[in-house]
Image 1: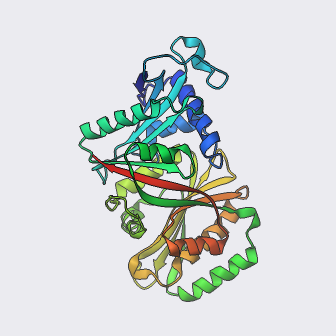
Image 2: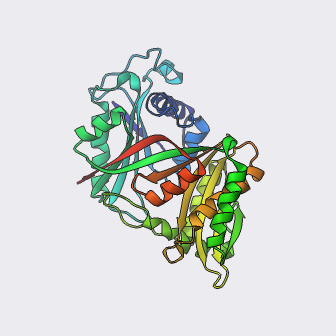
Amino acid sequence: MQLHWLDPERLTDRDVAGAVAVLESSRQVDSPHQLSLTAGDFVTEVRHGFDGDPAAIAVVRGLPDGRDVVPTDHLAGPDAALGSGPVTAVLEVELPHRDNTHLAMVRVTVHPAIRRRGLGARLFDTAVELAGAQGRTLVVVNCWDGTAGVEFAKSMGMDRASHEVKRTQNLLSVDETGLASLASAARRHAGGYDIVRLAGRTPAEMLADIAAMAGAINDAPTDDLDIEDMVFTPDRVEAFESAQLAHHRRLYRVVARERATGELAGHTYVGVDGQRPWHATQFDTSVVREHRGRRLGLLLKAEMLRWLRDAEPNLERLETWNAASNAYMIGVNETLGYEVIAEVVGWQRHL
């Protein structure tokens, strides 16, 4: 087995192609509802991550016993002619630096054609060693429910710790009259608030207020995960936006601002894929604790849908995530017409 950690500034076409082949083949088996992966997507992920704090990523060739894998129809590709064999697996280890510096988030992806040969276990052990060397005391893994990842996590001695649900909304089927009615009803409970639209980067003069407001997401359920609150700063807001723009996502944020005080009370935040303009991702919807009970969550999301209808006429699908125990936000999403697509189980192991 040959494991090679990728240098974000010295990526080769060979490594990128091999990694994408493994990740895309696994997606087709484990999560066909996910967007397909391109080389450009992968390069951006290596360099920027989701929020400007990228994971360490390695590509693997061969098997744990040192044997090279003979290319097959499933594994053949650009690597096959290079003598060292194709990429057989990808290892990702995320070591947060802004908060939760006690944990490592690990993702092991083995090509479906060669699973159950011990490669995943070997890579998981490698990740655990790296986490320990970096002073991390907790390893966290997520996997799609109902896939081979569940049994793998159990076999690695991990404990089930969280349950999240992915939902999607078909924007082509949104009832515009019904949406307007929902927004109007919610607005009657939120008469003391103005709704503000922010496109693209957050204005410099609003960064501190946006960061303070974003901390409201820490009230969302985390089930049994041994994690700390996220720390939001203006720098973190800017880093996230830079990473999302590098992913070619157009950013839309709708904010509720209390008219009497000028305080930001809550927001909803969406990224539209510039390369797949029919698809968008919901980053966050949260309301500051002191401003809850005024249907701001529903109002904000309804106003976002109305904005996207005009700003992104090609948009068809909006995806979001919720903890399965987050009854309030699930209720809002179901009222708006979201439907369950998949579920993810989170696992943890203390070192």
